[in-house]
Length: 327
Figure 1: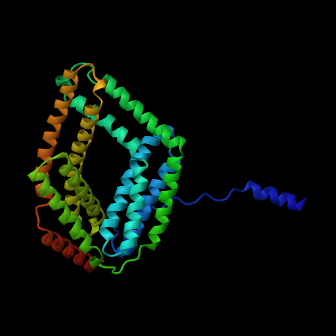
Figure 2 (figure 1 turned 180 degrees about the vertical axis):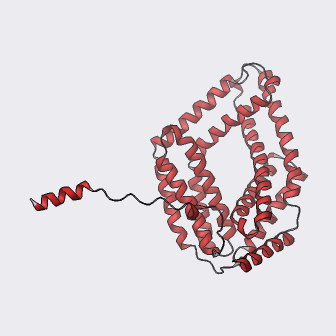
């Protein structure tokens, strides 16, 4: 009887719920007084844990946003890896970068379909007076259908569950990221490379503003945006300003890329339009908007990459030394 009572009492007391994660531990930036290796590992682990948790908890209505957010978090972690590349083992960098890229690719179909829908809606709102009535009804219906089928495939094939597990495993592996240095020298060579590559891609886009050049520039700008977020405490005012401008530039270039993808889709699917002039009107609106975005992006990019790489790094290093004196 006593044993049964004890068993009943034990069953009546559920185990305590796990403590919620400390938001500070998942902030996408270094924390004042934090050693660089500890901060980089914490940042990467936090982003991967958030992505894994969001995908695991996503229900069907919220699956699209969860997929979108998971891809953004993977891009942030890949940027952190690039920032750490010269301080960690090269083989580890290559393996983790490739695995994260492949993981994100499994979610790309659903995300890309959603972006086409949003891009078309924004274009219609901007050029409503220039497009024939109901010009995109069939195209819009087809895009929504493809998006729904992509989400259904993710759920049916267990992709989101497997991706959540992969992100959790990648987060656990961040403990293996060992650094040769623990001061600014751990990040300086990679930061220099990120900035120099972005500047080079911008110059290529200025010389030839093709969709390919602008997309290459966008990828490098997003790296700069993310690392400026990570390094915010190193030079708060300068990094905040750089982060804001790089983010805006990445958005302009991202909108340009999305329009280029939509244009390719329209070219390949002419049967989604009543006639040729209707389709041509949409293509003309796409090209007009892309021209506006490319001009704005190149102008803003000149300001983002105004300083030569040597001066850019020297300014940040001065901020780092000041941070050490204040900590």
